[in-house]
Length: 149
Image (cartoon, rainbow, N blue to C red; front, side, top):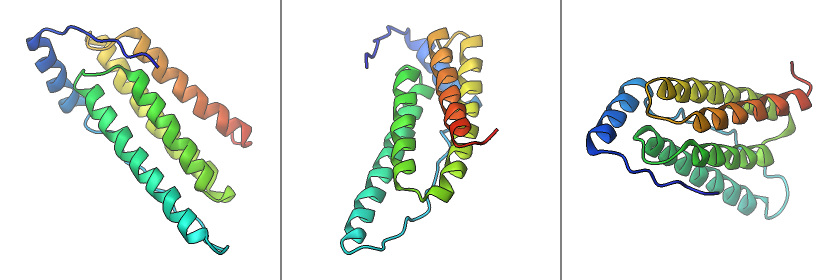
């Protein structure tokens, strides 16, 4: 993953942060139901998995805050979202995976709208919009693979 450094005038960075906080707020947090601990040693595994999800959630939230302030591009946000969703899907019981995907689809749609709004006012690139759109489409594909229309 490549991050592009942008030289943003101080006034523009302030404007971007103001617009981001006023319009977009923080990334919605997600929660995961505790998975079953049925085997010996499963409690340790469950703890490790939950800690991984917690850490990835914090990273995704921080990355979205940075994006909202104009300090990073959306590529890092979508990569963190994807890593978090993968961890949640790995840990979740099969009967909860569709719910996770539907919640993440709502999150992805909101982020796509946020990025589109930022593009329209000139504080985000069209590449960021395409990245947000591709992430939403990935979630829709995963839902379709689960048999959900």
